[in-house]
Image (cartoon, rainbow over all chains, first blue to last red; front, side, top):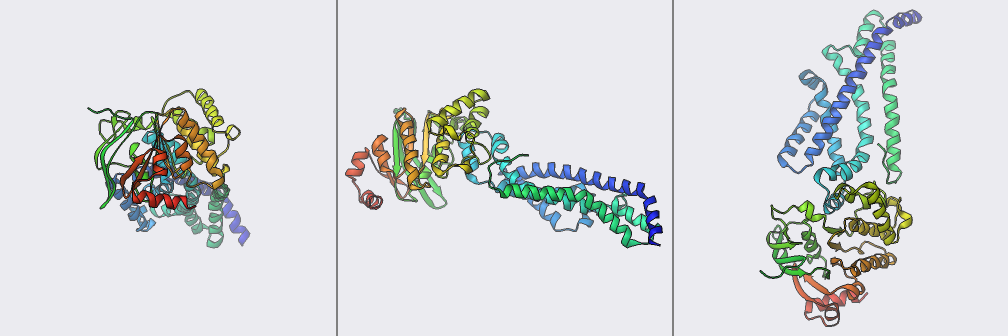
Length: 205
Length: 247
């Protein structure tokens, strides 16, 4: 019985691969866009203009205060993510001690040079581990796009289970699919955290 | 028009909220002069020197540095700052850069000196402050005294006209103070214009032309180190000196 279902499942592997591909592509797009936007707006938010900082802060609160599934229906997929990553970047930039900025200021570095040479390299050390952890969440959360009809890995699960009525087996395999994508990132986050724990002045990006 | 010094405070006032942290400061520092600023904590001495390179803004009065008015919209503060070295109490070295990179960062990016040339000059400066063997060390691998010497070399790398020191030895273990003071004496003897916030009287006696004593935001007394330490004129300076001399 199980064996029979398993064979039938094996037959639907092209569909599963397509779903996995969709999950990875969607995650990648929102990861890259979310990071870039979060990075840019994080810099803007700490830039000293009060109005801009308030508007961006309100955006972050809005994103945090509404369910992901609701946001998906409203604005698809990309916009919510950078709200979260934006906060990580803001926190990272603010964690760099004032003395660092003053030292850079005193030696005549321009605003951009201060960011590029002094603030960001130090902020990245703080931001990177939680950011990679955030990427893992993002990949898992991408499953909600199945609700708007995109054929990602989770939706493939729903489609297949209609043919092979063994939900436990089907979604176990769906879980394995997500794990294969996420596990390398989990390992990366752990390595980055360990490196920052080792009190060394060096950072390699 | 009266003669202007390298650093010229004329009736400078500053408030933090209701607190008048700098009260009608008038003080002129001549080229090649070394002025030591001392006084009890909270007297405004750090604020005073932080105004010189615009880390603090002034409320009214004039502050002219190297012929340019600080805080004037017409003054390019970024370029004025390249002429002023600032040594912090807490060193503020860039932790993600080596000693040499700390020294060469501004020369390469601000002065646009070619990297090879900047690194050669940087190595020479680090050798001058006694750290030739620490060129590739990160700040976390250096002692406090070594970090502060790198910080001084970092300022010298810009070939500034003025050097400001904000309690450069206060965060150091006692056995490391003299190695930093020795470097400062060497810088002073080369003719650098310096304002130094410190209670190190040995340093003041050795190189300072003038000691300025501040209390509650005002300059209370000013004179040669010998006058000030041997014959303080006011009750407040006598009280202050008896406290720092007791230890």
